[in-house]
Amino acid sequence: MKIIAKEKWPDFVAKLIEDYEVYAPVEAGEAITFQKIREPKEGQWHYANTTTSAKGVFLPQTETLFCYEMNNGHVKLEPIEDVAKDRVLLAVRPCDARAVSILDRVFDTEEKPDVYYVNRRRRTTIVALGCNVPRSTCFCTAVGGDPFGKEGADVLLTDLGDRYLAEPLTPRGEALLSTAHFREATQKERSDAKRIATHARKQMAPLPDTTSLPSALGGMIEAPIWQALQERCLGCAVCAYVCPTCYCFDIVDEVCDATSGKRVRNWDCCQFAVYTLEASGHNPRPTGRERMRQRVMHKFNYMAMGGAPLGCVGCGRCVISCPVNIDIREILGAITAAKAT
Ligand code: SF4
Ligand code: SF4
Image (tube, rainbow, N blue to C red; front, side, top):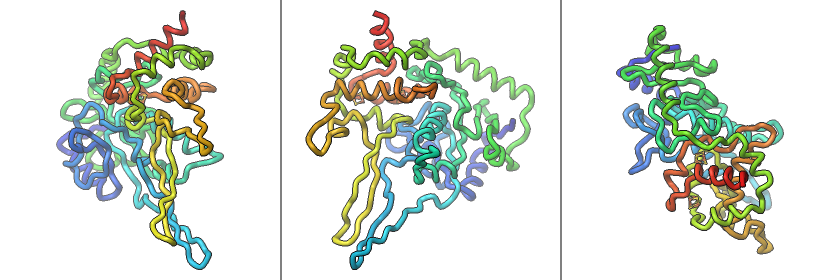
């Protein structure tokens, strides 16, 4: 384990910027989002959690997949190469790093890897920053996570006040910490980091046990609870857009002129009425009841089949951002209660 003094952190980040594309939490109006930084002072290193997740670093909200040009009956495709350099994603919370490993299960499969996602993912080193003080809306421990979890990360940082303890978790992480900005951690510093992590875990609010959710949901397709739950929902999709594990997308062809255009992928959401609308006019999820059910079922039943992780890392963003205060923790509690009756 290594130590870097906080006064040396900007120099380390500046060195990273020379060698990599560096993404970090950045203030954007009232929000904090992950963006590419050009100098260390652009990064926000003291924040509770970002407004949007790091998902966009791997799966941008909108991206051109390729451009096309027609010439005398021939179609020429121009692929887009958007990863010029290896990347480093800095100061991502452990829930978000874990969410990336959940997205890997969708986009980096052996049968059908998504080349756009895989290209970014394989060229990105993830530096996670443990949560000394989890927010009241955080519930990572209820869904298999930990405020100092290591899954998905290459390095885990612990804030020791005037220093960071940096634990390399992969060879890539090891390489990142091999600069002169770091020294070996003392036994006391290691113990301090452990104590901080234990304290953080104890601060997590008690939450409903989610271990039985996948099987409980299995028999609840027609349960009355979906009707009650959807009545407040506006179908605005904020919950999905801020969620680090939601990945619905839509692909459209945009025509530029008579002979050229581009194919674009955009985030989409199963809470939108038109998401499942078929060309015939039939919609298999015609009301909010089916759409609310789909979102919950997907995260807590379909994705968790065969022992896979739930599709929620407990970041609490949907709890904070929903304009009508729909709280996923209450939904999970209501499902558990409905199943018990
Ligand atoms: S943010 Fe709230 S209101 Fe909007 S779609 Fe999600 S649950 Fe419904
Ligand atoms: S469902 Fe809500 S709490 Fe769970 S990962 Fe998505 S945004 Fe975070």
